Image (cartoon, rainbow, N blue to C red):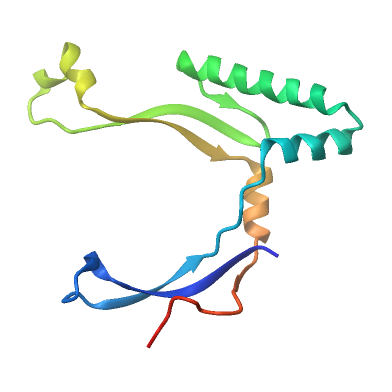
Amino acid sequence: MGLQYRKTKMTLNFREEKPQVYKLRQLTYPAVTTSQLVAECANSCSVNPSQTKAVIDALVNRLVHYMAIGHGVKMGDFGSFKPTFNSKTVKVLDDLDGDEAIKTIKVKKIQFYPGKAFKDMLDELSITSASEDLDVKE
């Protein structure tokens, strides 16, 4: 089925004096749960669901462990994970010394770089209009 969109109308900066603009907005669906994925993987591999869950839990545990000590993790066709951060700019180099440097960190995050399996999926992903454009009223 792929992704579906609808046309939406919005006001820039939510101010009436600003112009009205239009954009496509993706329809969202409920997320698939870990339990659903475990059941499907267990079924397709003829493995006990509790064993499948144990392997996934161990994998997540190791991902967290290695990223917590600064390593990126490459997972073949799945992709790579890398811990990273964004920081504020400062005008004086000395402001990046000691504890002051840490205060410039705005956000810590995990960057995901999709591998071949996901890139191939994106290349083939269809994007179509939903049957109704619910948010456009002229």
